Length: 314
Image 1 (tube, helix red, strand yellow):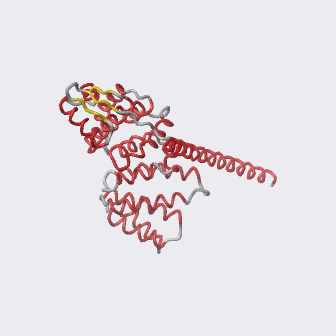
Image 2: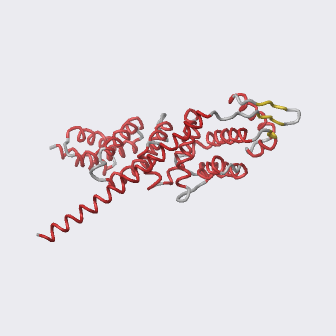
Image 3: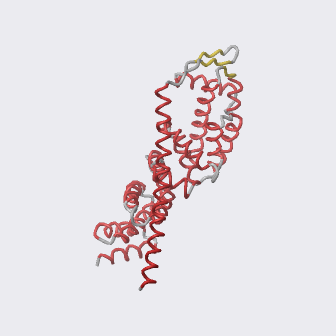
């Protein structure tokens, strides 16, 4: 009668009783030994919890589904890729409603298998990774990984958020980056998942902009920088002075002449080696993923050829 639990849970889902559906599908997934149906039940349970807004259980189910999908590697590579694409899309509902969602989306999307999925199958999701990393100041050290993903996908997809990253971190075009911040504000206001994060994003984007600007320029006109940050002069000057103090940048502020003098900070050789090693590791993971896909395709092709030869011989 275990299969009846699945059918009854599916019936409740069709009737709109999502709480009852989630409960029945949970019990089915515990009792059943049919792996394919259990996976379908897990998807149904996740959908039910999203629809009733039970974000805590939905967050746990995202992780369970992620583990189940990772175990499919040898059985169905194409199906595994498709399920990862769907999980990334469904997870947006959970991550942007759960209290720890901003950490969750960053951790998930920067995992090698999911960053490869984004770059190969759904590059439009980069928008949400960029927003999560920029808004989450505790994860600001991950911005370099995001820049690499944006650079790899720039020929497939772009929007104001990806263009902001490209302008600021790749082209160092501060005029363009300043314009992109304005466009990002409009995009976020009209995005279903990001509409509540507009102010946080703009504030943090200004922080990233000012940090890069201060690293490149040795003498900064406070009025010009405030203008690039789309802020009033007095407000911008106070914000920049506070940024320099909080970031412990070695600088001298001359409010009389309205300038900031930045003392150069050379990048230590060990740090350069670490950064290059991280980049090589990232590229190696991308290449390994491509090789695995190629081998899987060749195995599938040889298997189909051998089956056709066997049938011809018989």
